[in-house]
Each structure stands twice: as structure tokens, then as C-alpha cells.
Length: 530
Image 1 (cartoon, rainbow, N blue to C red):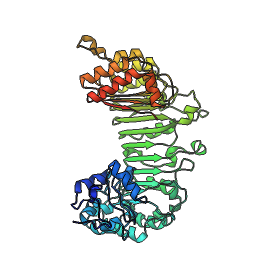
Image 2: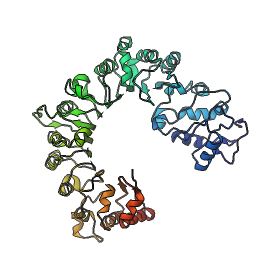
Image 3: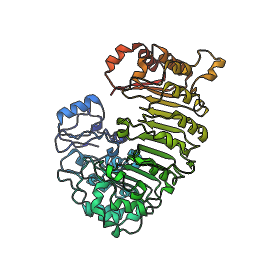
């Protein structure tokens, strides 16, 4: 089967331009975002992710489309254009593109505005593709898909649940042209919304649209709100949507309150949703402790919790909960202090009081960040009362001392179960991972009774800063070497800031040994600077 390119394809330089169709290569190219199609230039042809061929292709076809690196845009296809390389693709390739455009393959649906031409003709019987919408403004005028096109897809979706995402490349407060027309069609099937991503500032123009809904969003399972931090993040449409969606299990809010709203209405007042069914909660907005306690007291089914801007109003008193909050199913927890408080070097402890009032017996993964007032006593009591077996523990720019770390590693809730440990101190020159701590983490060269006293014997991944390695003269590398020899330690990651060559001149011994281990054994070694 010929591709009918003009000029004929050079099969020695472009693997995809082979006369015979290679479905595996096409599928890999779509899945990994390395398949691209050029516009209306005579050199346009499909290409694959080979560095030399890619560079030559760019030189010969400067107007070619570059591969999509964003995972949310993998597998995209450009609109059908007469005379382009896409117009000559055989049906087999279009079928592979159609199969790979769904969210089950690449993690995101194909944009409605970019699925056209032959792909539309090929997939008319693939009903699952019509249940996934990505609404994205395109062109210099930032126009959305035509209303008739959206209506057609809604009709073809039948009665199946819908996945709808508003993709915003350039964050803009103004709603694009055609937004109301598109939303009028989508709101008519509101009862079938299942997974939705909303760009909240656009919803200011949607206040009256809920009156057109065919029913409440009873099928809505996951909701992600996105917006700019400089604007109020909730609108009447967004508030009403979460009020009527009684079955949301996954909620993600990417935004922040302004200072004026933080002292006004609380989080639960502006977001009147049913927290009782939530299993995943991810909040990027500044959240004060009273609101955290109020939310957690209602989320007994919570499995994953991530609060990235834990905050407090220092001038306003707050009342602790009368009883300990039980989260029996919580397996993953991330608590990060609001960066403004961190920069201001606030003397108020936030993570400590929160840990003092929650009970999480199923917790396996814990992440703490930007806490300048780390309360080790509260953390120790939390581990003891919850009786949880942590498998991964991460400290990111937390004022944890050497004694705090050693006390944590000695805890029975960490000692026998910890498989991943990450200690990142950022720009700080100090590290809690001292020589004594590394010595206790180093297993004996031969089996002996002292092996029982070794910290974290089941550790599989270790992540530290560049500054941490600087204080050692072979001890850290020896610890890694012995753990790698046992076959338990699988990965070592060293991260930080600064010039890598300068770093090597300062501490060559540990790094060279660890890198050689990575080359000779199955140990995965990653050394990166920012």
C-alpha cells in the first residue's frame, strides 16, 4: 500500500514512510506523543522519535508540527487539510489513531475540535470515542468547536456517561467565542456528566445554564476545578454544580483564595458539597485549620488526601475538635504549609496540631513540606496512636533535626515497613541525615545479630539532596553499596540545585562509587540538578 507522497518517501530515512503499514510503530508513536503530521508542505510525512531523523525532518520541513509533550494532549490529530500528509494516510493508520485517542490509552480524550476528516469517517462506529470531549479554543480568534459538531457528538454518545475537559493552553480570564453555545449543548446532558474538568473563570458566563439541564448531575464522580490564583475561584455555576452532585468521589481544586475571602466565608460555605462520599481530595487553595478539621470530620471514606497550602490566620483564634477525627481508610496523605507563611518564618506550627487530632490506621504514604516549626513530639504520638505502618515517608524543606530523624527511624511504625525515604532540604546547607544516622542505616557486611538494629532494612528507594552528600567521605556510598548488594535497595535519587560539574569536584568519592554501582548492578541511580 502506497502513501502517495509527493515527492515519494525516502524509506531509508523515515521508518513510518515504509510501503508496508506498521501498526505497532504507529501505536507506539501515538501513545508516547512522538507521532506528528506536518501541514501543507510537500515534505510533510509521518515520522518517528529517532533523534537524527527528527532533526533532519525539522531542517527539511520547518513548518512541521512538533510532538505534543503534554500527557493530556498525546494522540492528537490535526484537522483534515487537502493536500497535507494526513489526507493520504491509509484507513489502517486512521483506525490506529482512533483507537489510541481514547482516555484509556493515553490518559486523556482527543479534543473534539481536532478530530475531523478521515478520522470522523473511520470512527463513526466507535461509540466510546464520542463520550469524551476536550473543549479547547483554537486559532488566533480562540474559537471553540461548532455547536452543531458538539450536538452531533452528544447524540452519538447515546445514554453513556461523559468525560468533559476544558483544556486551557494560555490561561485567560475572558471566555472564548462560542463558549455559551457549546455549554448549552453539554448542559442538556448534565445528568450524564461523569468526569469533568472546569476552567472556573469561564463559568462566570454560565450562571443561568443550569436551568437548561436535563436533571441533576447524579453520575458525576470526579470534578477538577482550575483557575487563576489572582481571581476568586468559585462562581455560582461551580458552587451549584457541587451542591447538586451528591456522588462525587474525587475532587481536585487548583486555585487559591484571596486574602479577603480567607477571612470571610469559609471553605465549606463557598463549596457546599457532600464530602461524605469523597475518596480523593486534592486542594491547592490556602486552607485554614478550622476548615481542614471541618472537612476531615465529614470524609470517613477518604483514601487519598493532599493539601498543598495549609494556612492559618494568626490573629484569629481557632478551636480544636472535641474528639479525634477517624480516617480509617486513608492510605496517602500530603500536608504542605502555605509558602507565604514559610517565607515569613511564621512561628505557628500547623502540621503538628493537625496530626494531633486525626487517627489514620491505614496510612501508608506520608509527605510533609515547608514546615519551619516541625513538631516531632506530635508526629511521634501520631504514629503511635494511629498504629500505622508507613511504607513511604517524604520530608521536603522541613525543619527536622538529626535527633528527630533518628527517633522517627527507630519507631516501630517505620522501622520494619519503610520502603521509600525522601529527605529534601532545598537550599538549606544542613541535613538531618548525619553520619550517625547513615551508620545506623548501613547493614553489616556479614550476617550478625546487629543487623536487627539497622534502620529501615526493607528500604527500596532513597532520595536525598546534594548538600547531604557533601558532608560524607565514603560513608553514604558504602551504605548504598551494602544495601544494593542485598538486592533490596532498587533506586537512589540525588537532587538539588547548583552546577553538576562543580558538585563533582567537591564530592567525587561517593558519587563515583554510586554511579559505578548503577552501571554494574540493577540499582537505578538518578543524579539531577535544577
